[in-house]
Amino acid sequence: MKLNHLLILVFFITGNAWADDEKPADEDATDQEAVEQTQKTEEFKKPTGAARRELEDQIVAAMVEEYNEEVEEDLDEVVCKRERVTGQRTKVRICKTRRQIRADEAATERLLQQRTRASSGPAESAGMGAN
Image (cartoon, rainbow, N blue to C red; front, side):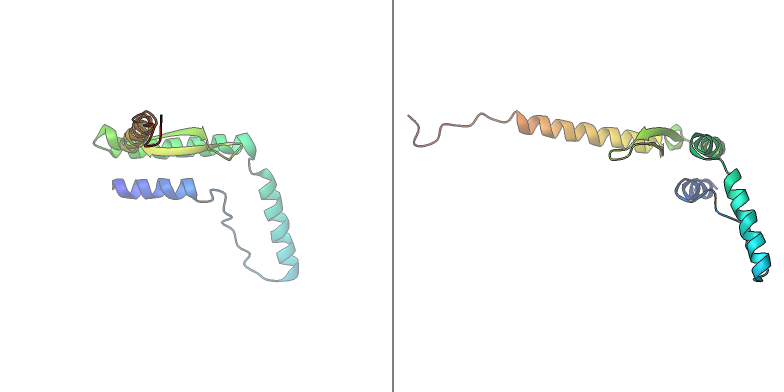
């Protein structure tokens, strides 16, 4: 049950939430034009920018809440937040479990410790020809 919720959540986050459900039944030119005009009108009505992000956030929040109710451990709860990713102007929604967040933090801490040790290594000796 938990896996199904997680897969749905991942699909929603990575998928296109605004896919068109309606396909033209007739391929006649006049019907096709009417369908295209209707699709353009519907496309125009779809929320854009901040309104779309807010709507997506509400949907994802509801899905995450439903998933988190089914989870037994706190570390398996999903947490979503918006972060600015390097190389992008806008913020992106990032959803991870608390376990993944802790693992990322631990990996970052290890990397920082390795870099600190490497930069504060033993002082270089003068070598054989030094006076």
